[in-house]
Length: 237
Image 1 (cartoon, rainbow, N blue to C red):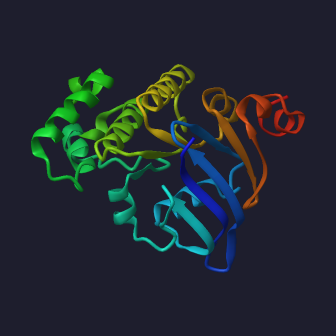
Image 2 (image 1 turned 90 degrees about the vertical axis):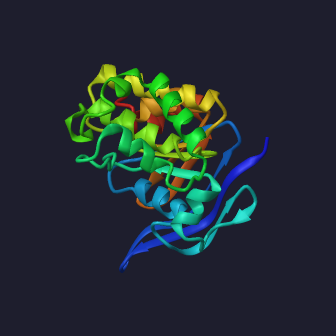
């Protein structure tokens, strides 16, 4: 199995605060990998460091075997790593379709962009109905669909999802996670950060547990779901 992403002993800081303390993890081609942990554990920092938004202080990040540790964020996106940020970060005053068009800002194939917008609408029919509405008028679940659709417009090879279930009703959460699995089945590797550990582990192949900036456990998702410490700390057991 080809390795898409590899982090080796990666450290990252916010000022004098050490947010990541030498984390190592991998994502293989075709996998969904879950990164779980409590609030403040460093999960979002890990994604932001991979994306180039936060600069790694030490360590190495390889994407498809190429060192991207010091690459600027826009080149990382061009290479095929696209992040759906925590809180969605949609542009609320712009129309739904304009948000999708912005997702394709790195591309120069207008006919294919139009085709891909239609594919997003096929995947998320509610967005087609809302295409000309300001994105801020969408419900929380619809905004999350738009954020994912916008990321897909960049044609990612590796999709980074930061807390996709945040603030959503249980039925909507189930729908979002079904969509994540569908995207993965269509060939996109996924690294998902999620506080809803049970849902994340149910849909993923492997998982890592992050505590105060350090990875303390990594295993198959099935084994993590049955791990006594994980059950007690994250699964409400």
